[in-house]
Length: 322
Image (cartoon, rainbow, N blue to C red):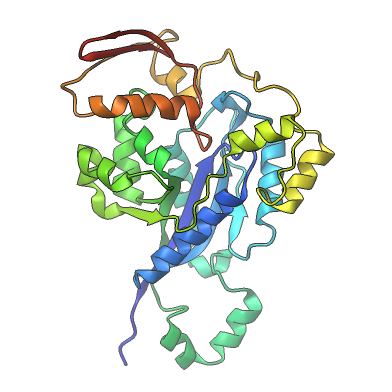
């Protein structure tokens, strides 16, 4: 029988993970199942890459704590690991650069099997290798190419944030979508497909965007988790148990969210002046989306947080200060 060849994939999730939640871990599982069901891919590794302290997000605790919580959350997984390269950088690193770093690592590793990229434990691998025919039937190791494809794993809010002025460099968006690709996990009420169809850049790279619908309503938010902890409420079953214990042992998230409150989010600080003002004309294709983008900047728990003040609203225009 003909052997179907599958493309190996490594999933990379960047974000604050402040703290990491069960939903963050669930995203990896959803993405792996979706790619497997296409019949064209086999996910060989998942990487959690917490952002560095230089991101300056409001309420962001030290990277040493976020890294350790991510490690604790991934302990029970055979294929998801935590990488500290991004978080250890002295300044905030753009997502495109993080992807380049990990892609270079995959290339330099040569044969990916030598670098813990398989989802199967070594013992299982040896057992399967004793019967090559079985391996060929279930396609477990029939993969094409030595270097896996690297794809960004994210939520729909990240995809939509590509439309937020000065939050992403246009060339970075092109690189992320064109060179690597995105696996986007959508939540209830999110219409990622509609947003993609209305965006020129997203439509142009549609074949590299995999939209995965979360089939169980799950609105776990790191922001809500932090709020519950400050109130002394239980967050068990929202976070992995080892993460809950770590938070308790280190008395995390007891203080208010005022850390970095007076700082400007690193991307906005880098790409704009301190008092950047943006005037959006409604004739622009993104005008109808701008109010949504405004909400993302204020409320997103996954990646973004910024202080936005409406200075004036004029007919046909939005004028805000970041």
